[in-house]
Image 1 (cartoon, rainbow, N blue to C red):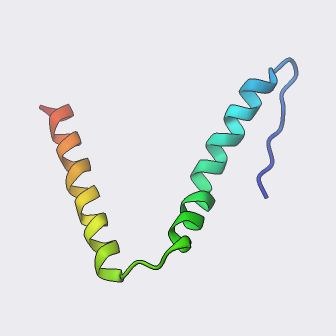
Image 2: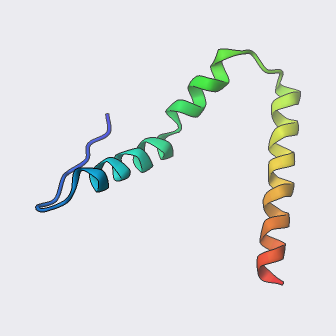
Length: 64
């Protein structure tokens, strides 16, 4: 269960934004979507490798 403490004078929009960020970090929605259809382990691994290559390319551009 996600608990968000609202600070004094904090707008509801900011509290909602913090809630959404915490919810995103838990990965519940990502897990739900992945369980909707079965994906073979080889396909999952392939997408992970593609993502890792993409992220490495992004980091290389930043460091250059």
